[in-house]
Image 1 (cartoon, helix red, strand yellow):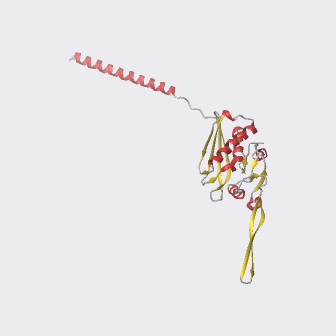
Image 2 (cartoon, one colour):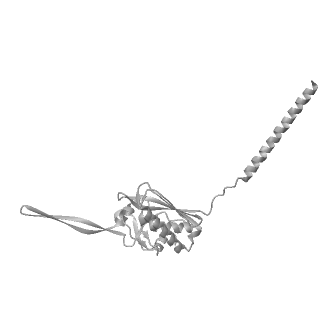
Image 3 (tube, rainbow, N blue to C red):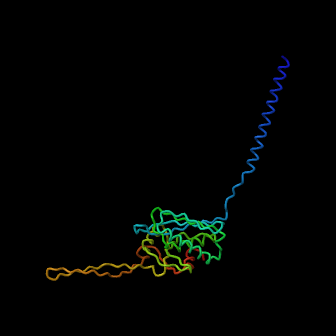
Length: 247
């Protein structure tokens, strides 16, 4: 009987030692696994620039869109995230020209960056080339890691030589710019005023017959006075930069 108790106590002791050993091994494996998990570091070389851009929706009304351009170290890729925007291909072409002009203005080779373009809007906005100037301004700011004057907005196409071209719906865009709280609206050269053709109908009666004619009288509207926002005309991207605080 005594031998049975000795065997039982020996087995109990061995079982305890085995449990302690397994616990130590599990703790060691956990430490090894934790040591292999890489530390995630916050990216410090990514620059994101936000710019409000007025546009015209599919019903001809002025709407506000938000343009976000992000520049991060990369391989020269151009990525787009654009929703609810008509004339998508025209906007993509404007992005390529904006990148080219931004490289010329800044002297920075964008092939060492990935540029990500995002346009947000709650309505179906007519994009096309009319956001070209804004795309260029935001790209320059992103490459130079600088912020923009948020009280300024711009409309206009962009040409490879940096020229800002004419667009449509300037008065509607001016209204949208005012509603979004902008203080200054930059427009292409010659578009600070809008020509409106006002119909004038005149009728006269000769005997039993009435003759009516309609003539259109040209009326020039000063957009700044009509909408109530300061409007400045710019002919190229260099002129526009100073208003955004980039010169």
